[in-house]
Every structure is written in C-alpha cells, then in structure tokens.
Length: 82
Image (cartoon, rainbow, N blue to C red; front, side):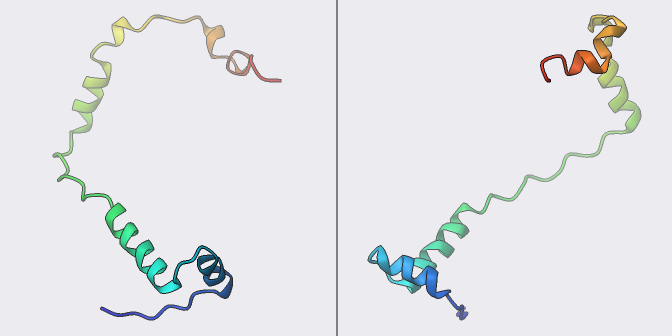
C-alpha cells in the first residue's frame, strides 16, 4: 500500500541535518511503530457474578486491623502537606 504524506519543512530540515533522508526516516518511524504495537490481549475470562466478587473481597476482612476514627480525618490524610 502506498500513501502520500507531507513532511513539514522544519522536520525535514532536522532529518537532513542528521545526514538522513526524510522519506527513509519516516519509513523507519512507521516500521518502529508497527513493531511496538502491543500484542492482542488474551480472551477475557468469564465475568464474575457481583455476589461472588463481594464474597471474595470480604473473605479475609476479619484480618484487617480496626483503625481509630482519627485515622480517616482530612488532617490525617494531609498531615505531610502544608
């Protein structure tokens, strides 16, 4: 497939200043972008029912330490800031 692009004069000048040709440099950029395209994601796992999700989240909640109410004040969150 062939497409035509217009390379801005400033960009072409920068490429030429490095001793390169604008056409080959743009082709290299396209080639790199194609190689850098991430692999497709694996198929999605079946969705979990909301109830099952909540049960899993709560499974070990009894092991979470109880914190005093003062731990959740605005001042406690921003104590290191002015």
